[in-house]
Length: 512
Image (cartoon, rainbow, N blue to C red; front, side, top):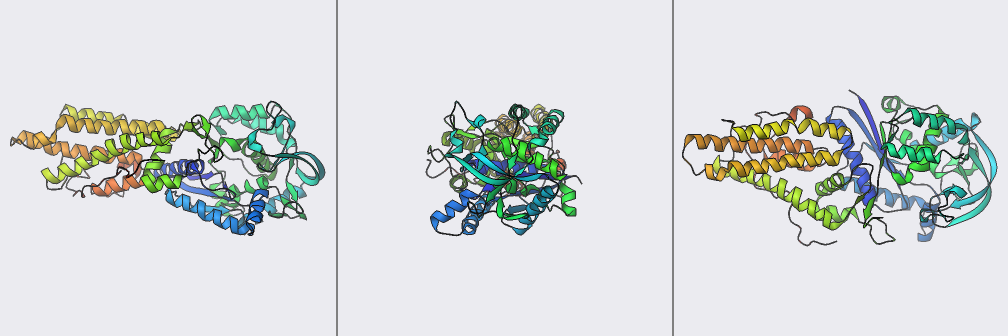
């Protein structure tokens, strides 16, 4: 069995869950579920980044200890994972001893090998981004809004020899086409690396910041939050143990485009190289959710609380929308109107109504049991030919992260099942006493149920709850592999269907 390791970026404890967090969790979960269904031994890590200046300041403002604030955030983000039906194997917190031990081990290793040195720093610092800046970070002579207030500081600190590895990193990106997905993001990194990079300040004096992991070689300083946070990807999978050797190198780090540069595409690979640890196979970089063309944010009043939408419309509806609507790697618009259009058209009408028609007609015409296929005409052959051109193609699209196109093809097949229902018109066949018509009736009921079973099988990585419900309502149980379940069979013949169920109820009150 092939090992497959995937991570999300860890969320920052100084904020509350929003749609960007939710999308990243769902996207990573869809990949993880898909790989499990394909037979891989998957390890899926997510977690919380808990150190740093902003956490310390926010806790001070509230008059609580930083760990209390982190505990609250951990509960919120774990709750988000549960609400979204995320199948993560672990949730790492950077305040855990298992993480801090690895950070201190690697810091000591780099210090002993001369990769870390002490020097005085004078320059610009962004408290919001918790990073030192250079003049080249300005846009049209101004600091971008993402950095917030930027101040000039002078202080003694420890530095990691980042610049020493610049040429190596350029060569690695050039020779590894799959290191950054989508590929155009790699061009942005290469553009960044055209200019000389500075060594990385990896400490903060305790007199300015106490909330961090103390340096093992100088207890008067704590580790820079990015040097701390990035190490979660190896501490969370047991660095130094057999478990680590089983899963590392990670197959995919799933991150937002805003933290590609410089943390994940410059700091992280160089840190690993200096530590003698294999690099990630790939960074999977997703885009932003936009509202009217602008990034969603609290400051503009466009932020969406995913938990509100899940409460109103259900987990699978939310999961379906974000995966169907965003082309992985690109930005996409998020609006309530767009969500409702998908909800009503794809989910409630095409899928939900089809299921109920099957349950109703099977109950009325064959005493609630799915009949056998007795005759196949042109309509049946046409539908099965379409399935043969759908199942494997969708799997191939999923393998290439083209989930939105895969879902489009899946729902095109579901639309064809609905068209087949109209063309065969079982309600008319049921009125006829002719044996040929009765055979056609039973065949149509079988074909409708079997085609729906196959279609919802393709939805399983994205809407696992829906697949489970539909299987149960069709009386379907199977110990087969996923690929075997996606093959036509007579497994439904003779099965008893469940009661009429509204999979996607119309909301009581529509509104933001």
